[in-house]
Length: 418
Image (cartoon, rainbow, N blue to C red; front, side, top):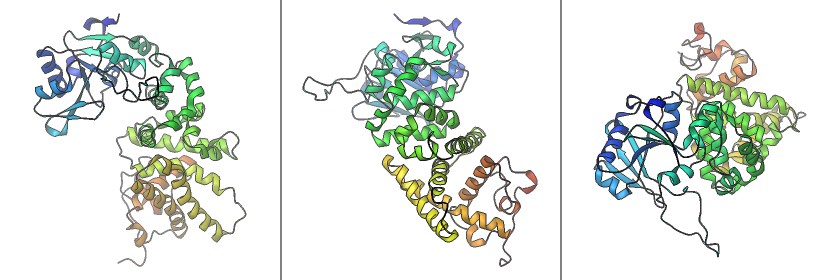
């Protein structure tokens, strides 16, 4: 039996829920269907946060949902969802209660995948989710919270725990390990010991997953303002080395300057988190450049006896190889990878410009110049280097919040310019 938490015992009110989501919830309810907010939206509301999305689950089937909302579209193949569209581009996603996850396969005795109807009960829908704090339902009929998985208790205790046996959960879908770490990083909660040990036991199974799914989940780790905590946990558990085995050369315990490289790695993303929390949109190319940078430093330092020209050529070749070698297996978009390569290659030009105390116009007009300077500033701050005035004077005033105000918005031009 579920724990049903009455309205008087929890802080969620209708005023905290998006108007569009309320319209969907109430229309389903008025037509006799069970209608609930589910997943991360309930979790965030209980934590006093504003959810990014308000997802709705119901016992109505997709065609019944679609019939109720003329402004809707059924999407998906195996697991059909309904997107309800509103003015201003808002979309409310409505799903029918499911009996199992999209990535769990039911096998017959001869090993064939069994294609079955995935619709289920509210309890089955809660039990199929990844972690307990995401398994809560808010029922619009009486404003209660329905808890089949002890999610409210784990929220109160600040624990991240899988629903059911973590060994089974991670075998069914290894991507759940990334999600466990992401939620621990975002909330600051502690990963329950059995769940943590299961990550250590099953981390190599992440390689069995679809590269595109792993890519999408991993890039979310970097984009949500908690990348530092997430990456620290991924290093601690070794999951990052299961995803990117060659990173051991830079970040592993046996790597030359491994501790120093780990510190730089986490410092870079600490600054990324700072910018994200300040509302800055960081291009994916910058995230990839920050991710690859410590690896490039590590492999470049393996050849310290090359001459200056040879070292420069080797570094250029290394940048191209490193970005493609690390990221190609996960099908990262070509545009973002190529821009990351240009950003990293531009750093030597920026360093040369600081020595000459001038940034040539032909360099400033490159399509990647602003991103290259942004990365230069992030790396300089992470390593404790002073950012030269000539660089600070060539970029928009709001590029980096930690640059001194007296240098913002001013420009210094080449003597050859009019």
